[in-house]
Length: 86
Image 1 (cartoon, helix red, strand yellow):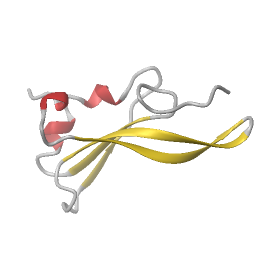
Image 2 (image 1 turned 45 degrees about the vertical axis):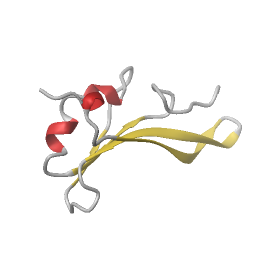
Image 3 (image 1 turned 60 degrees about the vertical axis):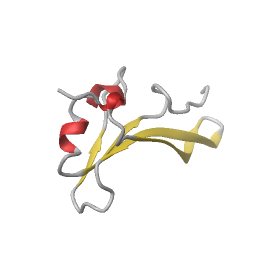
Image 4 (image 1 turned 90 degrees about the vertical axis):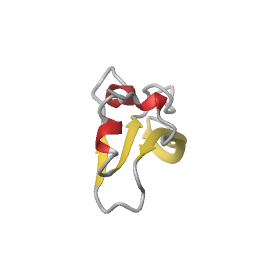
């Protein structure tokens, strides 16, 4: 099985977002890994559960990327995505 981290076709990106916190809206970012053809009409979004990261999809995403445009995100406060201290 291929691992996404080993694939040259993966694009890593940080997406700016506004997130609600106890102090109101704060600027932060979501980290995402994209694989597949962005022009492909089939889109797949991979979301992880609590306590894990987008790396959970590291072996699945490359296989799905063979026939769809895929994005796996690190939800706020996980892995490389930003988090508000609140």
